[in-house]
Length: 291
Image (tube, rainbow, N blue to C red; front, top):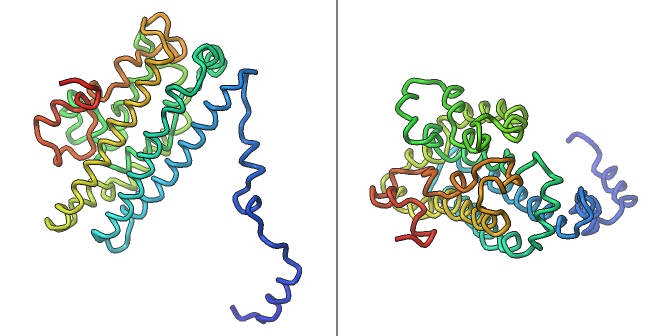
């Protein structure tokens, strides 16, 4: 660097030894939980969502390495897809912490103090979706034909989840959705533009047929993890903690989660070319125990 090495070595004489707790910022980490109520199980709710967001951050880091690799190879694809699938498998398998790990009565009380905040507002999860597939695949099938020739901003206007946080009675946007759009829509548009020719689906199509055949099973697992298994865990949690009558679901901001959460209703698929027509027609049903 054009500077005297001995000066740097002298500096080491006065530097503190690195500790585990300083390296991972343990004191900061353990003080990131700020419950809004006195119910102890609210801490479970907070920490599990924080853990989830950390896994999402790791997933986005892995996606970046696939989609913007200077020289794409099957090895890069396999390494990073394996990581992402493992992150989601860890999340899916640990969701029992949420499904059965909280006292139902405590949840129904402290959850009302958190409105209008919702896990729906996870910007990182929406970024994972945008980076995974061509943007029209994130629009409900019945609306895609009308988007032919439209720009990315118009397609984002129709992205499936924007109809998932509407008022059950009126169909108007909930405050939950309005807050989310204000916070993230510019970021989503910028990301959609950056990944338009660099998303996972597009990059997969740039591989040779031999490489595609090698990677396809991992992409199918990726599709199921994010679009079937993960939302199914949320659905099970909602069934466990929320009443099934529309008038009793205030904890979701008045949204019809019974229609929105099941994968068979959304039918969002990142890589439709990797699935048979029968599999697409039964998307999410087998995993829900249906024939």
